[in-house]
Image (cartoon, rainbow, N blue to C red; front, side, top):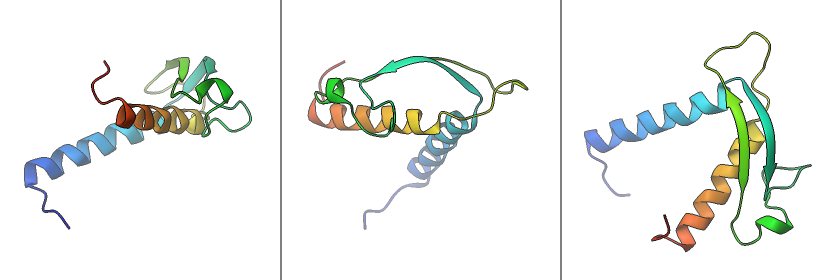
Length: 91
């Protein structure tokens, strides 16, 4: 197992905390594409080439919205990870 410096470990913990903040935040999805509507953790036919898109509003707190879009955020992140692994120089 590779060794991780204290600085790298601190950065990984911060990245993890940031990701968890998105997953737990109230979100209103305005629309999305490239992911299956019945299971947004999976690419759709249009997402087979690595494409995914979503539009949303997010808050740190909001009494009227509950964090219910966890699967969409995970699906988008997984699609981005796959695409970036296959196209490391694209920006």
